[in-house]
Each structure stands twice: as structure tokens, then as C-alpha cells.
Amino acid sequence: MITKRVSPVVIDGQRYFPLERPEQLPREFGSIELFIRNKVPVRFTRVADNTWVVHRTDRPGSTGVLVDDPEGDAEAKSGVTVKAPEAHETNRPRPRFIYSAAAATNVGLPDWRIPLQRVSWDDFLKFFESASV
Image (tube, one colour):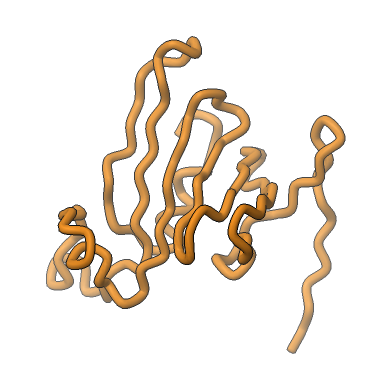
């Protein structure tokens, strides 16, 4: 196995590591990890066994929630329906993660929302392709 050595990016004295894999996310309840993806700084806080609060530090007042649901049973347990493409529409297995995000207008940003949806890890990373997404 080859280990890839990465250097953190330092922003305001904080070290941000490249965000590449879901295994990098914080594992302990209450722990925080700082990442950077395509120059977008992101903070993840573990709030439950399979749930993280996601903050883009370039967008004060924005908050997202990422849920790791590999078994696909979160909807049955919660009673909440999550939008996901049908398997026959995408020819891909059901996406593993559930994600949603929003920003408040009272912090000087336009009101925006990412609706509750199922996403693959690669699709989740697309939300951090640039500062404009």
C-alpha cells in the first residue's frame, strides 16, 4: 500500500488538510476537522454516530448536514423522504450519503439552499468545486 504524504494549507493560523475521502471525517463525537477542497475551506464537526455538521468558512452563516447512510435505512427510521435518483435512471447503486445545506440572509449572503438529497461521495465533493457553488 502506498501512503500519500500531504501538506496542510495554513489559513489564519489553522491547518486545513485536503478533503479526499470519507474516512478522513472526524470519528469522535464533538471532534472537529478542518479541510480544504479546491481552495474552499470546510469545517466538519461530528455530532452523532454517522452525522456531521458542515461549515464552509468562506460563507459565514451557512450550515450543512452530512449523514453517512450506507445501509439506506435512515429514511425508514426517521420517516423523512429523501430525494434520490432511481437506480434505473442512473445505473448506479443508491448513493451512500444524505446532504442538505442552507445559508441565512441576515449574514449578508443571498439566501440559498441545497435541498435534502442522497449523494455519492464524489457528488458531495462537487459542492466544493469553487467558492461560487
